[in-house]
Amino acid sequence: MSLSSSSDPRPSTSPPKTVESALGLLRSLQPQLTALCAAGKPGTLQGSLERVGAFESRNGAKVMWVSPREDERWPESEEELQERLKLVRVAELVHRAFRNAGYITETRPLKLHCTLINTSHRKPFNRNSQLFSFTDVLASDAILELQPSEDHAQATSVTPSSVSSSNRMVRVAFGTYDIPEIQLCAMGSSGRDGEYISLGNVQLTASGGSAAV
View 1: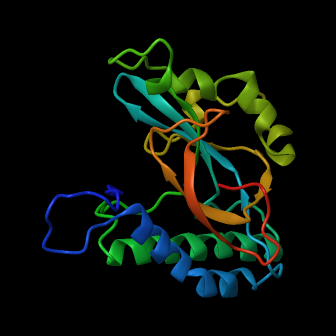
View 2: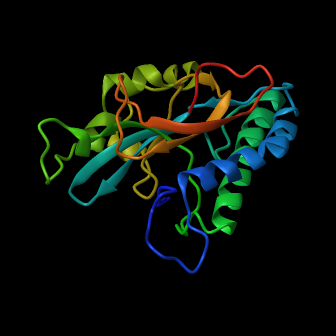
């Protein structure tokens, strides 16, 4: 989102999209978010990172990510299914509200993911981001070790030929994490540990927590 500060002097024919108004919209969703999180495991929201992929160009990749599964037919319990669908419903509720209010103009579908590598942040800074070979990543021992045990027992390696060229993504077991809040963060900012700086949040559970996404 492109947000202005509340003190922006530029004239506008419509109410400005500010950090404060965005946070107001986010916090207005709390009753609906709380209701969604009450389903399944009451009062919780979790995300399981089960896929690794990359944003690639013809010459290589700049970004590698992990994400929850989508429509893959991998084994999962009924409880795991319900928790995964709950995460999707929460994300879609927030995304739809901000899109309908004109804060989000991006037309591509929402893709939940956690960035592992972004070469544009390499130091020293270089305008021409150094690319890496995602093919080499997929063929590495590290990817093999991250595969779920049932996949690991059947595979000796993840070779480029075993991955669809139209969907270069493989299954991994990267862990399940509690999500106690949703934050509005400043893109390009950097906190003490290199994280984006939070401008505000909405709690998803009554007890809250110190961790966030």
